[in-house]
Each structure stands twice: as C-alpha cells, then as structure tokens.
Length: 64
Image (cartoon, rainbow, N blue to C red; front, side, top):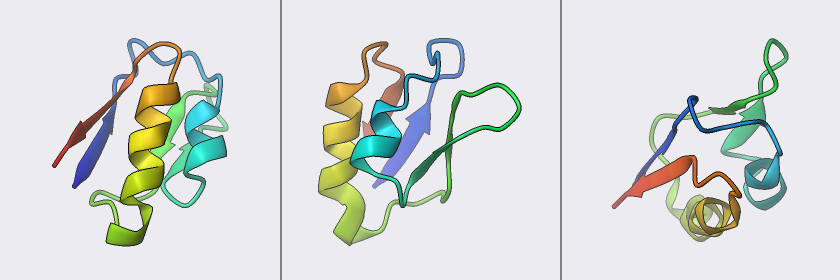
C-alpha cells in the first residue's frame, strides 16, 4: 500500500498524525502533513485507511 498527501488540500489539522503517527508527521516548515515512509508497512495499513477517512480536507489518498 502507498499513501499520498495532496499538499494543495492539506491545512495541517493533524488528524493523520493522531491515527497513524508512525506514517505521518506535520512539517516544521509549513505545518502540513508529510509521509515518513514511501510504502506503508502492513501493520500500519488499517491506521492509514482510518487517517484518510478522518482527514477533513480529504487530502490523503491510498493506493492498495
């Protein structure tokens, strides 16, 4: 699985970090979400799906 953050939509509310802190981090520069890894580890996939659903801006996309 891969995840992607659309930086044009992300406003840094941090829901992704709450659900999947091992995968997402908020940038120190602009406060928007960034991925810690290119490919999502299997044990984090459910958390990433939840993060994508919880994102108010729908800025996270998931490719299985």
